[in-house]
Amino acid sequence: DAGVIQSPRHEVTEMGQEVTLRCKPISGHNSLFWYRQTMMRGLELLIYFNNNVPIDDSGMPEDRFSAKMPNASFSTLKIQPSEPRDSAVYFCASSSYSGATEAFFGQGTRLTVV
Amino acid sequence: AQKITQTQPGMFVQEKEAVTLDCTYDTSDQSYGLFWYKQPSSGEMIFLIYQGSYDEQNATEGRYSLNFQKARKSANLVISASQLGDSAMYFCAMKLGGTGGFKTIFGAGTRLFVKA
Image (cartoon, rainbow over all chains, first blue to last red; front, side):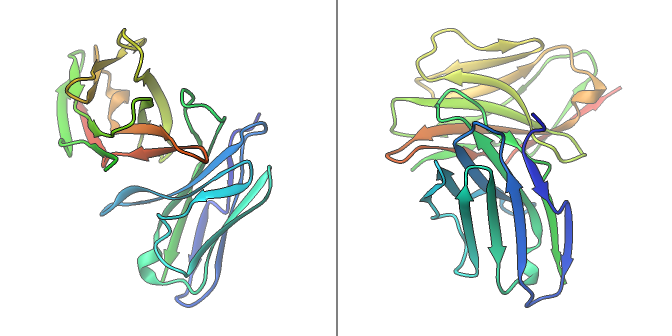
């Protein structure tokens, strides 16, 4: 398996534009997580899905953020409109439904909003 | 509240020496998992070691061991015989179950510098 695949790896956009980050989890994993990493706030859990259903989105910072998982092999995180303070590295991770297994991370998307 | 605390923003260690990275956690759950991840300067997140809350023995993986003290709610990572390649950010994490599934939360991380 190729692991968790995120795209794009880097995104530079202007304030106010819509940004869509994409994630393909590891086949067979039924839990998917979106994290945001910044120097100030560390790794924050934004939202996670189980069997394609959003379970907890309490970490989503604002209504400008939304996430979907239309099927088991694809998820998106959308920011509309984007703001400079959204600049961060966004990680997608997937895991099997077990308390004992680790989350496997994608390479991350480095987002810069100017 | 469910929380992971790493109180050491940065640590230095001499090559070939052992180093302990501190982690304390807070949860009222009885069942949880504790993990350590390494993030080198390239940015990827690398899983190192896992400890279950019911595991009585401390987990070990090669040069990594987890010093699990349940009563104190601590899960310190011990790296033996440090190598230059160990220089990285290290994150302690806790996996918790809920009605809908499991989630993993992370501490702020400790940056380790290995000196030659």
